[in-house]
Length: 133
Ligand SMILES: NC(=O)c1ccc[n+]([C@@H]2O[C@H](COP(=O)([O-])OP(=O)(O)OC[C@H]3O[C@@H](n4cnc5c(N)ncnc54)[C@H](OP(=O)(O)O)[C@@H]3O)[C@@H](O)[C@H]2O)c1
View 1 (cartoon, rainbow, N blue to C red):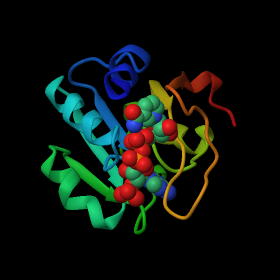
View 2: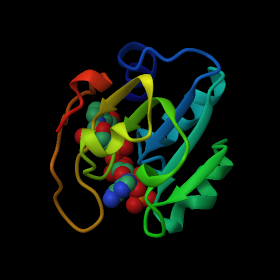
View 3: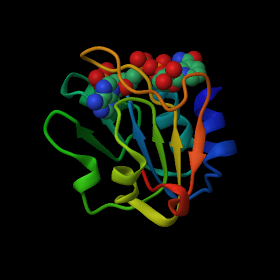
View 4: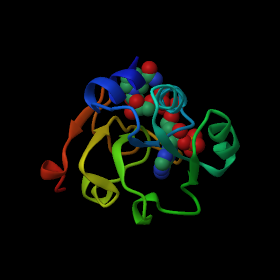
C-alpha cells in the first residue's frame, strides 16, 4: 500500500517515466520496484551490496550498492525518487531529479542505528522548487 501510494498517488508516476527506489531491498522497496516495473517504469534501485542480486531479480534495470557508490553523483535523472532508507537530504537528491520530477520521502532507520526521518507513517513529497534543504 505504501509503495503504491508513494509511486502513484504521491509521486504522480506515469508509465514510461524513470524511477529511483532508495531502499529497494526493504519491505516497501521490494514492492515499489515490482509495482513500478508493472506500471511501465524504467526503475533503478539502491540497496546494500548483500541485496543487489535480489533487487535485480525483482526487475530493477540497474541496482546501485550504496556502500560503493553515491547515486546522487550519477548522470541519471529520475522523474520520481522514492526514498525509503538512508538520510539523504532533498538538496542532495535534487541533483538527480528531473526538472519536473517528484521526490517522495518516507525514510527511517537504516543499517547502523537510528537515522533522521522525514516521514515515518506515510510518504510526503516535494517538487524541486521546494527541495532546498
Ligand atoms: N513497512 C510498512 O508497511 C511501512 C508503512 C508506512 C511507512 N513505512 C516507512 O517506509 C520506510 C521504509 O520501510 P520498510 O518497511 O521498507 O523498511 P526496511 O524493510 O527496514 O527497509 C529499509 C531499506 O533502507 C535501505 N537502507 C538502509 N540504509 C540505507 C542507506 N544508507 N542508503 C540507502 N538505503 C539504505 C535498506 O537497504 P539494505 O537492507 O539493503 O541495507 C532497506 O532496503 C520507513 O521509513 C517506514 O517507516 C513503512
